[in-house]
Image (cartoon, rainbow, N blue to C red; front, side, top):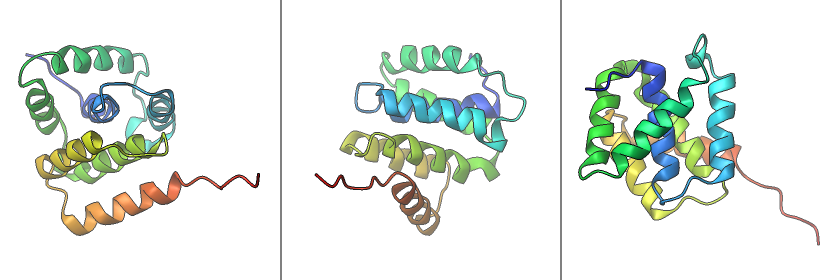
Amino acid sequence: MTVLTPQDALVAVMVTTSAADQRLSTPELLSIERIVSAMPAFEGYDPDRVAMVSRMVMDMLSEEDGLDAILGLVREALPDELGETAYAMACDVAAADGRVKMTELRFLEMVRHELNVGRLAAAAIERGARARHMRIPRAD
């Protein structure tokens, strides 16, 4: 049985969000890296663990019911008060490449339910992620 730290659980949610569409895009991976290096929740976290957690997530996703297993590990490792934090990080990763795919939306909904993030809080978090990742149109 794999035991995750709360920070590992946050990384697992972000990596799974990125992998939801069957590919880990560069903007999404860079977003994960920026979040881990800048957010207070990762203070004291060894960034080398990101690769280990990423491998674990990818291995689990290749198994039947792997997604449910990941969510179970995350729920077990994450204190209740960090549910909205995990959801916000997942939304930022999903929005990082400029478009949120249907598979990512479905996974975000699963995260929301699994971590008991209320609809109003989720809507505010989603709106904030969308605002942070807006691009200025080019003047061609």
